Image 1: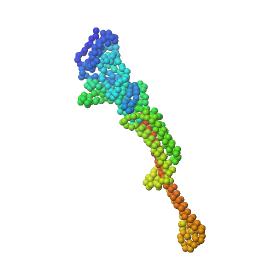
Image 2: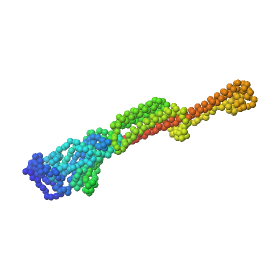
Image 3: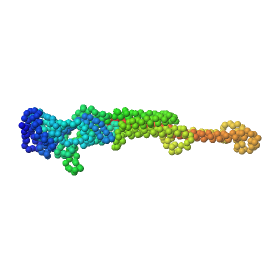
Image 4: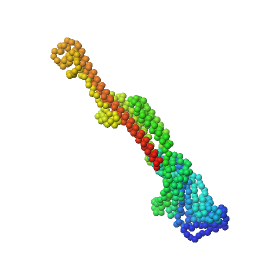
Length: 466
């Protein structure tokens, strides 16, 4: 015979069931009437809120989808609440707890706000009920949650994702949620059982409890929420080995290619081969790079600058080769180029402009000279100055006519030598411009590589110091 004894009306009274025998069958028969009340919240007075104590254990970090901003995790969710419709004497019924089908008892409609897909975890059909009226509901959940991913510092990024637990329709006057276990214990237990971390490492779990008003329906009664923050750090070793080190090696090889002679054709061919290899490298590693529309990762900017520097070095090599080979046919260096490049940039890269040496060419027709001249030459000069008494000698002596012709030839040779010297000076100026630009780009290359190494090491160390 099963009897249900109800106490006097009160706010938090429980229904006590009596068992005829201390065995499972008798307890199940005593709870039969209680299991028909699974459709209502298990309180004697509807003004009494149901307290939901909950915690979880993170069993696995299945992955992160940067493009869709999703986090895939596997958790073991534990909820516990009090059912005022039953309690029993463990001595009279022979046990302190029993597992019964889940659908036979009321269960809170607690959901995760960030949930973006259905739960595909195995279904647990039972719940534990205790003699005090406590109901323990533990089940696995495969959580596909939205997460605002910040991948600017990829692959040294740290993500902070949120699990917000709340009732779907019940207000805070109906359901209140509390933390069933300390966050430190949740983190410790999660780290001890975490087995599918992959490229992600669990750093911390934090919690926060706050109330959120329902603005859409204009209600003043808020929903009770319990928020967990999952802090994850990406393991960057794989990306450092597969992305950063090969890229740094290629750009370092391109840096040392500046040591090759600029006028050598092999230098430009070598740089074109490097650009082709780097392009193939970027195509291969494209699948490893995150894709998102929120922000551009810093590593993508690094790769773009590396490629731009390689292309700039190739264009600079073509320019310098043109200057070194065809500078003799160029016009004189413009004044602004002389000031900007030869003086300012040349001093900056320790290639100052060479001082011009005055080229002195003796003019055979010059009157003032300490050089002893033969009499025939003196006679020729007298004839050229039109001194009297010498024209007859010119006509009489054919050697004077030959000397006059020889003097004209020497004058032409002097003019050609002067033009050649001026052409060499123009060519040397343009060659100096090319050398300065080459040295300047070499310095820019070295500064960029040094700065990149410092930034990468600082971001990497900063991600581990958080």
